[in-house]
Length: 487
Image 1 (cartoon, rainbow, N blue to C red):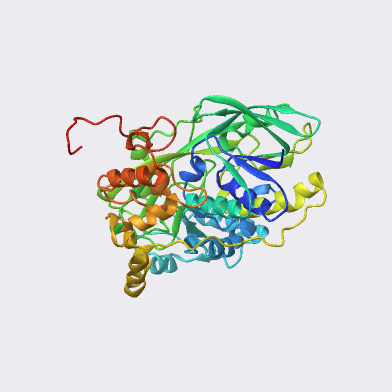
Image 2: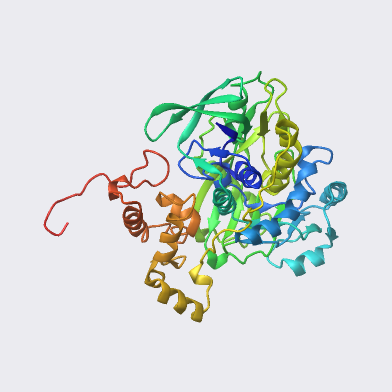
């Protein structure tokens, strides 16, 4: 019997899992996919928003700026790349200045610090590659991050503090019991059913959080998938802009942004389209063309010939227009943390703190903090960022750090072996890619992919044809093409 079961290992479930691991509770995180951060957390704008856009008086406005301010400490503790580069909302037209003033006033209500409305001359000095503007709202607290690296680090740290992680298990039903709940699971690896008992449940199932709620209570919210598509451009053009650049927002969202990434690329997108399919992450020529045509209104200097990848992600948009963070009125001890679309990533640490420190004590009662909580994780080696002396020292300790596997991103065998053998470690090619960036460069794994498969095979003690690209069934190899003494 677990004390708390968290359904979903995206950024929200991961933050809550880490916060709960501070307490003497038996906690488990359950994820339907075979890795942490495989859904919305893996495919979004990777922006830590300042908080001026989130409507004051709503949960989005309540948690955004607070969550933003928490990122510096948690990223330092868990060694996750994060940069406060700031953001600009630009006025393309003179009438947009009224929108900037409204955003400024809303930001003040939400507690966003140090905002300023810039003149067109100030914008040009700050971002010389933008097209002519009539001014901009500058928010220096906005930042860029790698969301999946954040979630992985959170789960790793939670596991170091005793939290369990159960992957490849989909919750198919939930039964109320005298002591709490029984979760009915489908083990997707073995294709068999099993059960798990827990006193309390926290529903962080993202796109499927409405479905999970409906297993124990009457439907009272609906999650609508909203797809956004993106371009990723090569690091060669990653310095086109210094800050996150937004057009003035519309009812559809924050618009087509142009932004540096925390790893030095350029990100352009997304569009915003409601779809019916909660797994519909394909890209379309029409949407990508729209993004190109729209983004050049911000800057006509985007070199789309330098695109190395396009992708799409789904946002879990609730029909009430706001975050849902509350205990179910019909199912005691069952907490919904749902509809966490933008600015969900920015708000995540504040949401987690609220759930664990405000909601859960009212449900559980006295929650005792651990005396030996570990706030950091094992040092994460990024070989390319070391100086020459440090590199030589690492190679002396482990020669595998002297073997470059991914030439585009300069990722070594030592780094890949490390992420495979950590808590919540990589078990797939995509898992290695998320943790090390091997395969995220210009060739997108064309050269390093086979070597990553070999390393996974060796470290996991599996045949190479058992190694997956990503989720269950995504086999890369099936059999040898020919046989011989040397094969």
